[in-house]
Image (cartoon, rainbow over all chains, first blue to last red; front, top):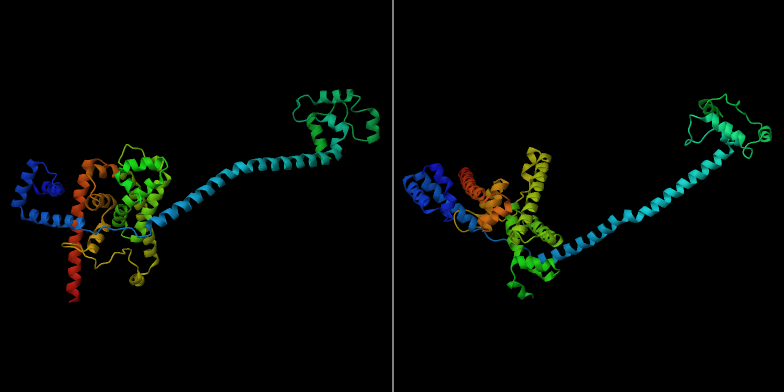
Length: 181
Length: 202
């Protein structure tokens, strides 16, 4: 056994865990090497010093403080759960508020657009809603004009509105016209 | 008050607590509070911080009682919790210390408050004082410090230390040996620097 191997077995020797064969070699080296013998003495002192350290004890009110802490944390936990549940509770209110705002916006928009020239009966029939097929605006004009209950010749004369010439205006032109008003 | 609890093993106690027996928790606290305080104190060198960490450990046990599974010893589980909390606290304290040192000018160093709150005059049997040993422990790196405290101060088995630290038994044995050698070296160094100081004064 060399000095390096000897050092690696110090703990096992001190703790009584070294197998008998290695123990013999260890003891042989210890008696042959004065430095290693000294290392062993210091090592043993260090381990003894660690073992002799006084045991620390908790303060007398430890349990009382612990139970207070647990109670405090439990209350905080309940509050936290309540807070976590809050968004769910707010969700209907949020939905209702959104719906109200949307409703107001729709009503306002309708009240404004109903008075605008672009929403007079003739324009309504000329401009298809976005969902309609914009490739065929002319058909929409023709259809609207054929519906006597929607637009009549007298209506057009009374309101004195601009009437686009039949089948001459493209959909893009109609949009430009409405936007220009 | 609950002497009949003495007859239960640690594992039986936590099982009872998991079923809602609060007295079982009280017995766990009484069984482990001093052991854990001693372990954490040697880790942090501060009575107050150690007690806070132990309180926090029991709080975790109380709150996470259902996370314990009877595949490991209960003591292994609770030491692992305490050890992890102690490590976190030690890192926090190191960071705080680093910042406070940054804030101090060189001329202000004499006002620095030492982190250790043990009494230097408190002696232990044998060659070294408690203060010297604690200073040497503080100087060990985390991996050596943990195994040395668990083995030489808490007197746990290699197997249990292996489970707590999460490394094989062979590694634990090797770390204990190297940790003790490092501690021996640090104590020797402390001794020589103290005798140097004493000779300068005289």
